[in-house]
Image 1 (tube, protein in one colour):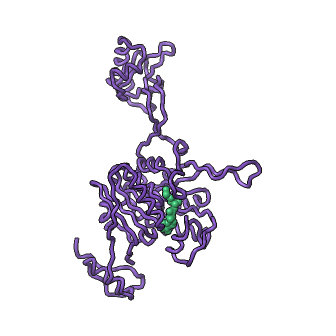
Image 2 (spheres, rainbow, N blue to C red; image 1 turned 45 degrees about the vertical axis):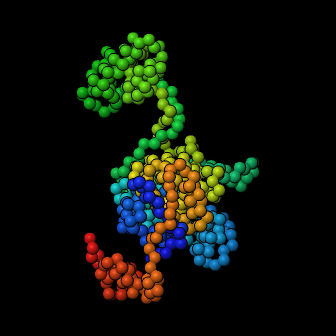
Image 3 (cartoon, helix red, strand yellow; image 1 turned 120 degrees about the vertical axis):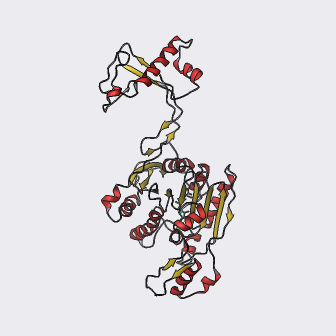
Length: 419
Ligand SMILES: C[S@@+](CC[C@H](N)C(=O)[O-])C[C@H]1O[C@@H](n2cnc3c(N)ncnc32)[C@H](O)[C@@H]1O
């Protein structure tokens, strides 16, 4: 089926491209492929997908006029419950996640799904299944991490039915098992320190030299030449007018973090190296309570915080990559992508969400302007009622040679003529 989107926006900012659509996501996902992605975003695959789907909280839905998607979505503040219960929800997610998996970059694609206790265990199994090609054990090897982020839902006093819910879970998967995460940092200040971890475990004969009269148990972490340079740095500091090594480092080396010092601690007889102070520390674990996950200042229910999306985007993609969010809500993923110089593709089914995205984009510092774009509209095709004829016309319009056998799978079959 070809879609006519009610609203689709595009934006070009130097080499970065953006596409945002008001559309039911499954309908859209099923039309995306490397050709359509390339056309609208310049990339054949998506490097990082973040989604924050409904959590299946079983919250009461507001009254809907009829059973159609559009009516449901337009009438609901927030669509988060499924007629067919849990199995309906899992099926809803599976169909969408399979498409996302298909669109992920085979070499460097990450997928992050934001959930809570209502559904995380079921969706983890679904993701294991998809990433393992039907084999759960194989799929588990593609799970990078469960990441815990903070939330506060309800404050109970004694005698409550349930303890307070203080976290959500993010499931992070990678398409290729060889992929590594980019280093990420948090703004935790670290004081300068003299450290004693001068050695490394594994043997390397060229690094087993004696330094300041000390022989390593295994081997030093630096080459002999580098270590002697650091020893000399410390000697120069001692001869200088400074008594505070940090002030000396700032004055002489202008906070160059590669400039190090090595000394021998005369009391212990051990070697020590000086680690400069730092404004940020590398994030090394999966409990992210140091940043906010939700932003209550945005007038959109369940809006996520840019700190969370900034961190995920930095960890899972590089400048120029393509980021996507197919449950984009008020567009925090899009805002972070713009700020971090990534291209973006995303959608939401609600007009209210798309309005919020446009509003949010207009407020960020970068000079961006979302313009309505034509995706594909064909009045001729709309008139065709026979499905086989429709499929053949689609192939012809794409300058292909259609198959004239009426196969029953409703797929568009044909041969590509142009390269
Ligand atoms: C939890 S909210 C996302 C919030 C978003 N991360 C943010 O920061 O604003 C889920 C969103 O998914 C949208 N949604 C739910 N089902 C959808 C579907 N099938 N197609 C498109 N959008 C859908 C809802 O309209 C809602 O905006």
